[in-house]
Image (cartoon, rainbow over all chains, first blue to last red; front, side):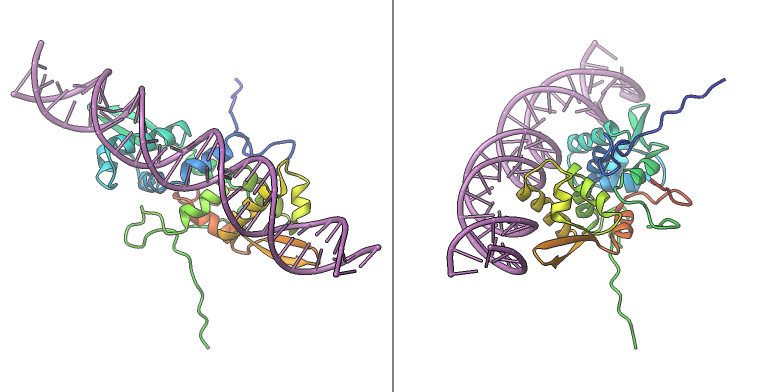
Length: 112
Length: 112
DNA sequence: CCTACGTTTCAAGCATGGTCGAAGCAATTC
DNA sequence: GAATTGCTTCGACCATGCTTGAAACGTAGG
């Protein structure tokens, strides 16, 4: 049996100094204070929207908008639990974000 | 003698789920195809503007605008050499970018 | 069923950032 | 010092993305 795994192209294979199709989109999704905060909160596990809501001073529909951006970027996934919707960090979110940076990481990595 | 080193705050010390003052600004600077390409090219050493120019199909003044954004973000530094201006990656650019991400890096780091 | 709750979608403002054309400035060459 | 080269700045346009208010949706409970 053969496993077919899809690997993302964060750079143009022909010219590595050109960003791949998703690299910039991924960074744009993170380059917003609200979405940054949501991702940071999701780093420690799933949260429902109302929980995220309670930590951000914005309207519900606006939060929903930003969550959609993160969803479209594939950085988070959702699951419904009764009335509530839980948001979880996509399993490959960290890896994809690192790979989206235009600079190779320093040796040994960094712990922010 | 005491050395005073300035460490950047990529997160709000009071609430780590809030971005620090420069984290989002840094990511915004990278979240553009042209600037992404410039940084990727600078990763292998200094380049003068005319060299960068020859790899990007945009007007000179527009390139200058994007270089200014990178300069203002502190990701690159310049030095004049005769008529030419050389752009170099700031020594802490990699570290600051990694620290600006809202997610802690995966164990062992990633080589993009 | 009808209501309440949690969340999303829609359509319309508004602000911001990227783009373009023209002019400006610094350093070299003639 | 006049002209040229390399790069930057300025002002105005335009597209995009964030924000807002109102409405719609699915689910649970009275």
